[in-house]
Image: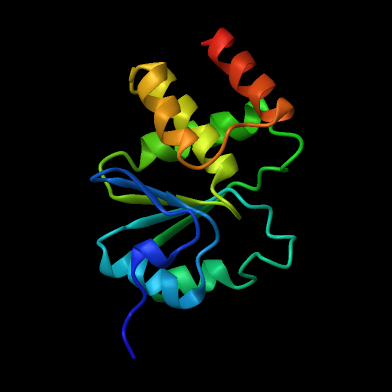
Length: 151
């Protein structure tokens, strides 16, 4: 049986050579993540929905990848969530990172903020990547605007 491709993962988007994002991968798709050379999996889903992979930390560990879980509540993202995400991204900046949630919406917003606020990429460029996945709803747009204003 052929190994799944990264493009098979829901809403997969390659941001750069060392950063990929997506919705929830299956256990088989996690093997494709490893095969693609990713070293770190960062999960922003809460772990409390039917679409979450309940044993994801163990599966990622079995693949020899590092796993970081930052549960971000869909309708209530916080400054602390974003600070934890920035810390995880900076701690692993010399490695190839795969960041996911359930649909790549939380992730695309957090990655936009990381790219603009930490990597100093233009808002237009970062927003173009996010817009390939979604246009933020009112809650998320307010969170993005607030985070950008706080710098």
